[in-house]
Image (cartoon, rainbow, N blue to C red; front, side, top):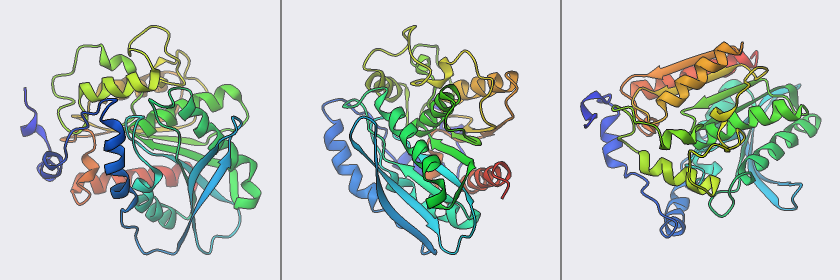
Length: 314
């Protein structure tokens, strides 16, 4: 069944021009090599925002690269946003999101840190989530030097980055040392069991399909997805207790492969007493925001920034 007729007409041309991932362990290195210069070369808006590359020492002894964005002229202790990029847990760099994050930092007057976490399959779970936790610890431990308010730190991620953001919120809650004020989960990849469940017939046709999902989870878990012993710090939907998580926005497309797992997670958060907003954008498969000029993409971006404004009391 094709869902082409259901796609927002402003979004469809960009989706049809964008190839699906279709990666294998053999093709992944060359795919990254081809993609990285393009991702790192995305044009950044000319705004008064200082960008610097930093390296955060990890407890394991390696250095975690991150991009720090700070608008010029900030005074006092301002909120911070820890950003985690997408890429199926296997590809991507912070630079791919820096153009949007630069505008967000400028518009909202916040500090943004985007973390270059280790990727699977070379570094399967828990490497990536531990890197993200170390980045969160960095923001808290250096709040004074960074000029940020440690009580107003949010986490945001897209796709696999949304999955890591959701898992980080669980990990931060359970370790009890570095609290989060808000989690913004944009089409989060949070449930490996989607790989083995019956497919929603209108989801998963464009950009990121079932085979891509299976490959990404297999790399992250270093095992077949769907087994009974997957950690919630790898797949947040596996968590049995959601009480005590920070207020949440989950945004997803009505044609996204992750629609069902995202809606289910939102309903479970609500049932656990977590203040939760769920935004579902009609006509939108995974990755629809590549059609940046589409009306729905602009609306989704405005919705995300409005949610951060409310959550961080800006």
